[in-house]
Length: 95
Image (cartoon, rainbow, N blue to C red; front, top):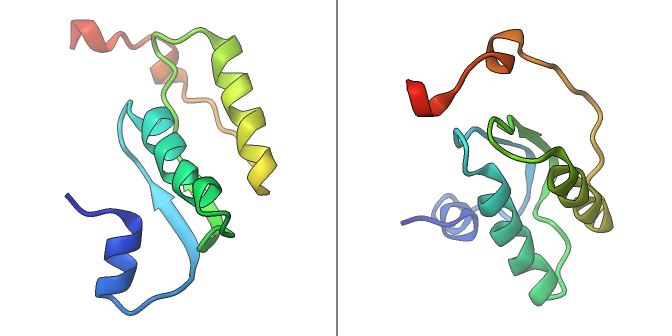
C-alpha cells in the first residue's frame, strides 16, 4: 500500500498544489488517518488544496459536521459543496 508521503517521495515532490481524493465511502477514515500523521509529527500539510468527494449515505450528519470542524484546525476550509440528487436516493446496500 502506498501512502501520500511514499508517493510524494517516489516522485520527488515536497508539496502538492491540489490533492484530489475519491475513495467511494472511506474518505472520512482515510483523510482522518492522513491528517493525523501531520498532527502527530507537528508538520504543515504538504498540499495546498484538497478536492474531496464525500459520501454520507448511511451516516448521521452530526458526526460528519464535527469531522469537518476538526479539519479546520489544520487550515482546511470547505469552499464548495454540490449535492448529487442521484445520491440522495441511492442505497449502496441495494446496489
